[in-house]
Amino acid sequence: MNVSDLIERPAGKSRYLEELSIGERFATRSINITEDEILDFARRFDPQPFHLDPSAAQRSIYGGLIASGFHTQAIVFGLFIELGVLAESSMGSPGMDDLKWLLPVRPGDSLRAEVEVLETRSSLTKPDRGIVRLRYHGYNQKGEEVIAFTVNHLLKRKRV
Amino acid sequence: MNVSDLIERPAGKSRYLEELSIGERFATRSINITEDEILDFARRFDPQPFHLDPSAAQRSIYGGLIASGFHTQAIVFGLFIELGVLAESSMGSPGMDDLKWLLPVRPGDSLRAEVEVLETRSSLTKPDRGIVRLRYHGYNQKGEEVIAFTVNHLLKRKRV
Image (cartoon, rainbow over all chains, first blue to last red; front, side, top):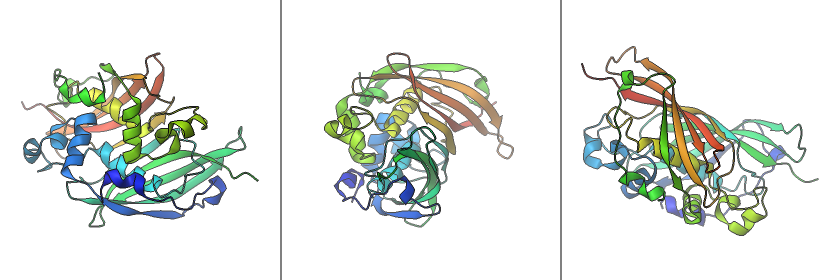
């Protein structure tokens, strides 16, 4: 299964803001990353030799082709979104912080994500919504953490 | 001209770590974003209704289709990379922080980037390299800032 299959997966149980608990953790399936996908992303968005050109990458400090960090980030985010946890409640996001690229991701690696609820807060001005801070962790097939980042999601509160 | 043309552009003058000055600012060309590109990115990486489905997006708080924030981020990053400022010196990146999605990006919008040197520091343990902190700003065709984020780039120092 590869990245382009993301959208084919069924949604899980959707949560509203107040249905998420601090410390709660969600785990995704894993997907493989192919060389073609790495090259395609690099051509569009991150044309650096170690993402784009297998022989130049061989001579770089990475010793071979690695995925753009923005590619890894988008895959890890997408794996959580397809779970459907935010399917009914998501209103987008005002921002993101504290992203660490911890290890390179290479062709043939597989990636899965775990996402932890760090904090929830209701809007002071708009009682129908609030912010949840989610910490995303991406792991490879050896269980090594390759990326981590925190997204502030704007979520609907449940209608009562 | 669209996003898939990124790689066609010639590289500019490449800089090593000590050739970047704090406060220096680089400006990129602008590119258009099409609905097809927005939908393609959303299908792969961010399958939320307001990125994926024009009629569901119409009923959302955005009143129409908007690009995934990760798409906007990747475009703005790629616009700077294709300038070639880091072509000879880039060794990748350990992380990123303080990303703000300030305004939605819609089909037909154009985006350009300005990138400012915030800080440079040499590695204490590896004298051939160091970190430059770059603040990326993305603007639409009206001159409105739509995104900002800071990347820590690992760069080579010039060989002397």
